[in-house]
Length: 285
Image 1 (cartoon, one colour):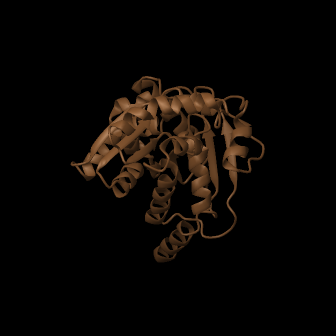
Image 2 (cartoon, helix red, strand yellow):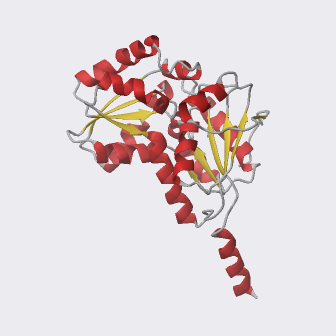
Image 3 (cartoon, rainbow, N blue to C red):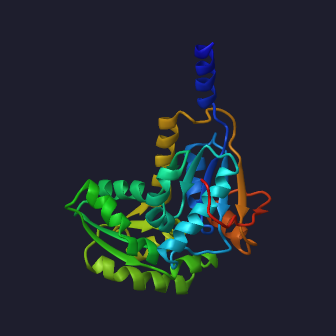
């Protein structure tokens, strides 16, 4: 009898249709959603955007951790089978303190980005751009140097980019000028690889590429995170091998231009967006 129960549990784990939970402070995490859907089209995804409190990048570490715990608790309530922190700030500041408390697997975006940067660089000088919280944490430096201590890293915070993206100014003269102002010092210092250390930033890949003119290789944290999600699901034997995955989106505040940016820039089909009240308090996880 016990063997039959074990076999049934194994079969269920190999056909797990529960959604993957993904959260970010705003729309940036939808770049991860798009990459996951392209790589794992059978998977259902529940996306939670904390649009009431975007961005996380300028918040204190304690606040980012509290917000992250609240978002994770909301995803756990949706019976997700795994959680993706599609936010570099939360991955850098909160993930190391949270992952040991969770009963379900969780992955962030820092480690996949670090691995991809090392594989991409030729002159062993990597640039990293991100929010203030991500850059101040030194998370990318630690992750990269843990894999290769001889890599030179030049990091810079770019706090104006997320508001410009949330505003939908993806191809705008002002945005181009801000990008040039941020990236020119990194290029002068000789980087040959640039980690987009914020999941919002892939939405600016065309504008960033125009400035770099092919001289620097871009590392997209969203695509590399999707690969890490695939490895996680395989490692836990919780993939959904059949069917067409569905995307459900919930936000903590009115989306404003959220849907337009998602549809135009990412070509994502998003149905009715739900509004969810933030679960305040001490999450049990």
